[in-house]
Length: 354
Image 1 (cartoon, rainbow, N blue to C red):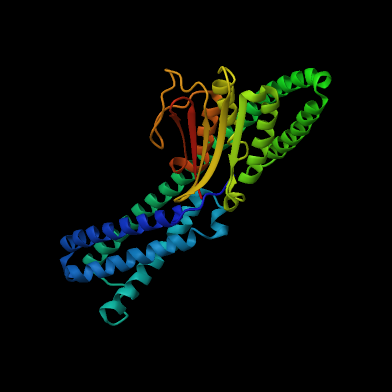
Image 2: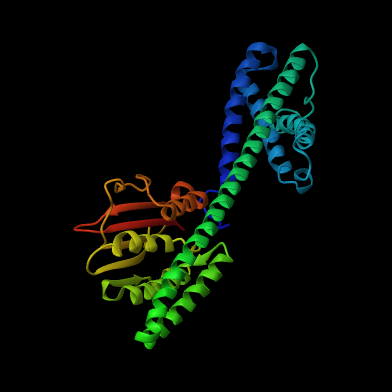
């Protein structure tokens, strides 16, 4: 799977949300405890104590959550043990921190009387609630990862099925052309064989990995387009532009191939006269953009152009597969859009985050 860098990792965002929520919850708890047991002190003093206990408690949960030994345990056992360690640690550690902040003598961590019993019971309920929230978030996060992995595997399976469907079709047509060229133009037949070898080698290499570079992807496209030029003759011209600084940019393998095939199959082959296809890569803020421009028949009335990054529907199994792969690997940060060109043709634009 291709790793996606982010400026702020998801686990840190989750920890920040949990901390902020706990801070607010402790503030509310301080007000309720002041109302229930006013003899414990002023509202400000209770606020300091409860916030310190809450933050130490959350810190203990965070530290224990990174323990490999605990992570190997079942969820229920792990969270019960986490509570057994974090609750007393948060209570005594938070009280000590609060006493130091308030410059009070360290020694009154455990009090006596009804009010202290109310405070202790209140703290246990609050800690149990926070533990429940943390455990629920952990379970939901694991389920989300499992769904994402399942979606990725399903998308990759669809890609392999698509390759199995496309490659024989392309091979049969190419071999049929070779059969006629062997007698009519042996030199052209040799060129087609050479490009077919390059194409098959690149597709074989792509099928064995989960990531490739733009340089390899463009080499595969060049071999494919050379074969198509030999088949279509002067009816097809192409241009590939890949800046040197983008050659090592990592992308999913065979991501652009269905877009180029779609442009030729539905746009350029049915069109009378000559046409062209351009594949242009460029850097954009936060990633790259690859545009596939053709001068073919254009979008049909049942295939509306999409003008927003995530708007519009892309028709065809190959193009739908590209969209599904982008969504599975990058989420909403990547997109595939189709746009009508003037006077004719289609522009397919792929945006991939860095």
